[in-house]
Length: 420
Image 1 (cartoon, rainbow, N blue to C red):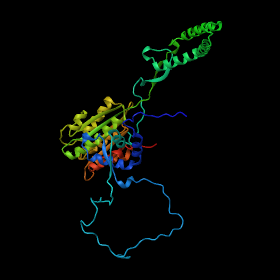
Image 2: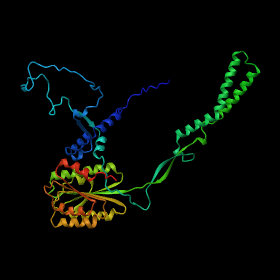
Image 3: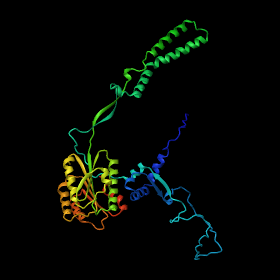
Image 4: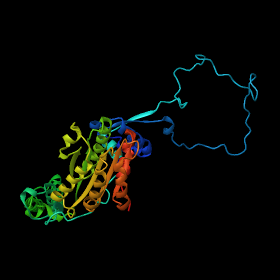
């Protein structure tokens, strides 16, 4: 029986299978640790790995063992100092013989700590999330075409020559065309060697065999090493690919009532959204809008780092967004999403105007609108007006974030993948 021994050195990922099994087993503990990590990181430091601690009691594994079975008689040894009902005094400090201290849970083992890689952390971070109600829409007059592999063909561009496939066919052809002559050649050479060993090398039969050997060798040599019939070229075809494009409007309130703590929460929320979108979607536009009394479209750097501030007129941001949609993102060709973060503090006369703009101009065009109100002890005027929008339009969602620990749960609730 043939035995194969693999003596290759193990690679750096030799424990990848065991690691994935471990991650699946402790899925819930890891997800809780990932959620807690959001509140303790800086905005610019969200996309990295994380150290995860798992209590020792959660590491116990099931084992098979023999049960007691049958009828048993057991004698437990007693003592001469205590009887049933006696109370035992707690030892004085330092009287014990142990070294070290016990954990608060009373366990004697340290917690198990391991580190999630950046990729693993982000996988858990955005697990089961998706943009709601993504639909396929006609994007342009000419559908998107992709070049895809379609096997091999016998004619094509020399640049697409597939060397391995061509050589395999050449080897097969040579074996098929020269297999018989090679076998006959081996037999003739063996017979000639036998005659020569018997001293009959000058006989007529030996001469005949030499002539046959020359003929067979010429026949084998006549089989070309590589023939045009062997050549194979990689083939690619144009394949229409259904596509959908999406745009996400990120609207952040930077007015005077949004202090640094509130702005930090808003930035963390939008940083999660930014990482989620750029990681999960190939084609998506991001439009960043900052507003106080005046709204302005800005780039990514200004959106997260600009220190501009002022009063509060939320309707200015909504009007700017409606103008951008009409100019650049027709709803017939784009999936339009909106995420807005504010503390809800707005001019009393402006909040009803925001409601009307949403109902008449924006909600008929968008797939989903998410509003988060940040660190408001009580719902503000904007929240009350938006409640009416939510009651009449199921594509409008709203949540409140009271502290850093609420960012991740709120984010998951807003963008949780809907099951069909």
